[in-house]
Image 1 (spheres, rainbow, N blue to C red):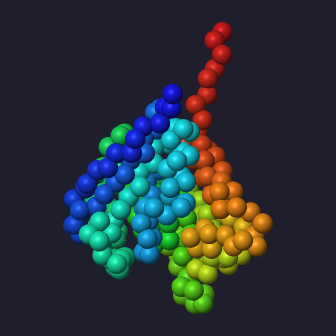
Image 2 (image 1 turned 180 degrees about the vertical axis):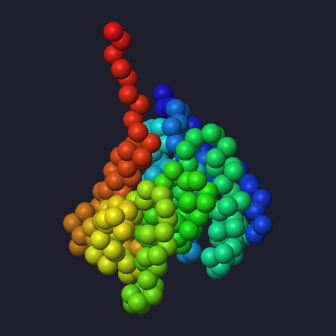
Image 3 (image 1 turned 60 degrees about the horizontal axis):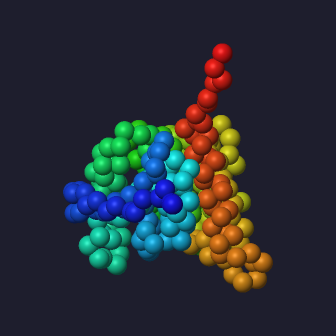
Length: 228
């Protein structure tokens, strides 16, 4: 018999209108991973679905967050300031379980997480397909948002992402304290071409295999000491 529980949906009022959280609750949760969508899609994004399916079994409750503009059925994302306001208003609901909360998102959602992580007291930041720059405009770098997150950060980036290929990111180090995992052949939506020689499921497994141990390291594994 499966230990997984059915997703639960919660509406949260924000200054920009109602937002929505879909909870994928872990049976014995140690952490909440809150992840939001990008400017061109919703929580049905393949990477968000994969994380929600894989992580609860590892003690991570996944909260998929829909911003008010998406809940309202609009086609165009709100301005960054409005997105940040919505995320801040959602945070008390995300923290309600009393567990550490990792702020995450894909694309525009990753930018929101980076911009607000320190002030909200996030345990870390998960940036999926971080849009380092607009396609074809590397001079319009958003690296400052990533480097200013002020929290342990993991970037998961497709090798063919036109918003920033892995080699375009600053070299991690004391001045750039984050980790970066490349997903070979993947584009901004983590789709891979047929010529890649790998399947879509295998590509998604690369993502979950990178995120799960990073979360384990972030919160620390429970240590059981032998009785003497």
